[in-house]
Length: 406
Image 1 (tube, rainbow, N blue to C red):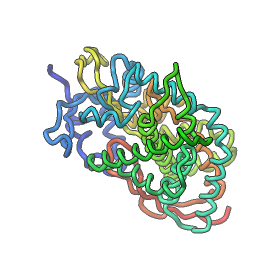
Image 2 (cartoon, rainbow, N blue to C red; image 1 turned 90 degrees about the vertical axis):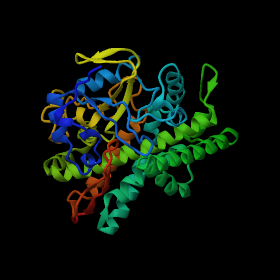
Image 3 (cartoon, one colour; image 1 turned 135 degrees about the horizontal axis):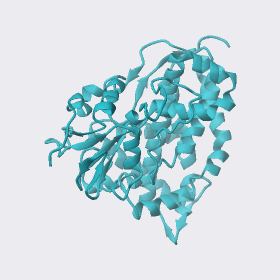
């Protein structure tokens, strides 16, 4: 079947150089206008040395939402990475790479313990951890925000939730960085180590339960079915990796955005509690911590009048959808009062919507509250360094100064 390509995109989305720095918005704007769906070649990697059949690139808010909300047509069981991996590798991502009914069963069990009520009960500890980190930064005067916050704050919270010993947290943070970075062989090995650690914890909690989330997961059941230690280990790795990276990335982009849009920083400080709900949603829209996920057509279908064959890969670009001017007024402006704000930072809806969304929102609101009130005049003192990563919108360094007393 002949598939349309886009001159503006010719191989660019799989060109590593395209993802260096923070300069993708202009290209995605052209693609949304000229080629909202286009056929792309697959990247050549050490795991995919000959490339692959290619994939459909979907870049508009409407199309990403359509793919997300039709899991019976666009499934996850063939993988959410662009390239094809071995089935045993797919299984290591747990619910990410599942469709109903397996996905439904596992999500029902996990949802029993990962509730908004439990997140609310955690708020006091989340706020205390945020203030502890800010107090430490105040003593330093100058600091790298990524190292002091993004690499420690969400990791500490997720570790507390899962009952991880504090002494193990640095090693687990290092594993998450390996999981989210090339080469794929190292990422795979790190994921196996993370799963093994989580499986071991699950076995311990089965015999010696505590009051942490892992113990609740061990005991939770639906229709008489409980998760095995291995299934909990996979979920542990997914939650820890996603929980650390998503919230850390959102906070990094928030600090840069509030520096680049000082009027928004000043506005938020006029009434932080009242403005926080909308502002936090804008932080996640702006950051788009996860750039993309893949689905696979389970039957012949079409998108925007374009025929899609069964077995074709379809990649949803959330970072483009969240800048779509058909869904957002003036999307290139960071606006903490934006309403409505139908961003897709936690997924485009459907049954793969992020389970940890409420926790990520709570962590982000609590930390920015502590930080902005402690450092209302903070400054960026050096170059913001962006990672070369087409899946996660990672910032690796943000040199900061506290900016003096309030």
